Image (cartoon, rainbow, N blue to C red; front, side, top):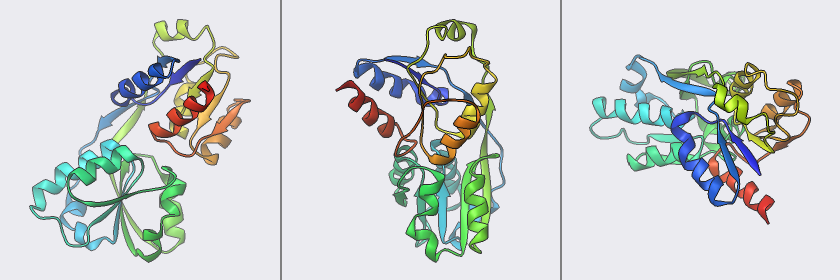
Length: 236
């Protein structure tokens, strides 16, 4: 099968190699580009005042760990990180920070995690404009949320060579966020260019259907393991 992969470029090669090893054709077309942002360090300096730190991606986790090193030669007692995705969790675990990974690896998985039931203050380390659902729902619960936007996601135009490649339809497009779906809308692909759209949550699925994707499947999470497990089943 032809599998369109739309993750940011830095995250694509490993996934593409795994898809190829399963016997499929990987088409790499990043929909979003991760661009680091300068951000204030006050929240990091006062990180011991938060009950839970939520990191929503590998770039967010890397930014957190790099700045923590500047202010905390020894991590504050009780520091705990709730990560979206095993990749994000691996970065904070490697820094010896107590970490759990949300199940599933989505905003909904974060909100269902028991750590938030006893949290009054949460630090959300994320990308600009992202994870609005977490913000809104925690506020509804009376939890004080401080956002730390460490990067922005810029839409990536579809290169002409990839546009030509997609004249032959992709059997599957793996799209992990609403923002990525919106970026792909700008590509103005011909009708039928994507036969099946795989997404990590019902919320992203609803958005895909609003953009007229007729065949949408919800996988258990946004991590690579979720899509690779499903592709393995499809290969049997």
